[in-house]
Image (cartoon, rainbow, N blue to C red; front, top):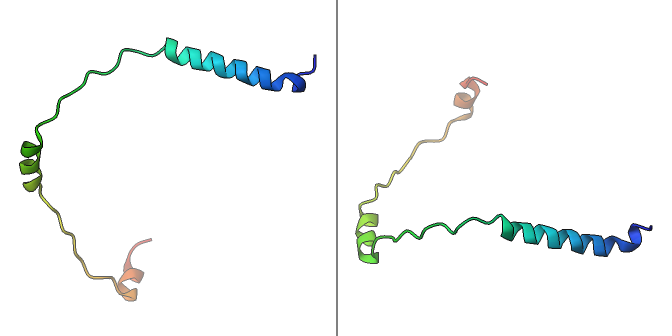
Length: 68
């Protein structure tokens, strides 16, 4: 039997088996979690802390002193 001649049929059969197995092993859908109303989430976002990091650049001499 010439496998190269029937490669397309073999591929389609494998895809069909994989597709069927994904549906057969699928679990129950995850429960839907209700989020807070939009107005309540807007007030929570306003109180979010913001961190600002600032520093000076190192000079070439300072970079040379850093351990490797």
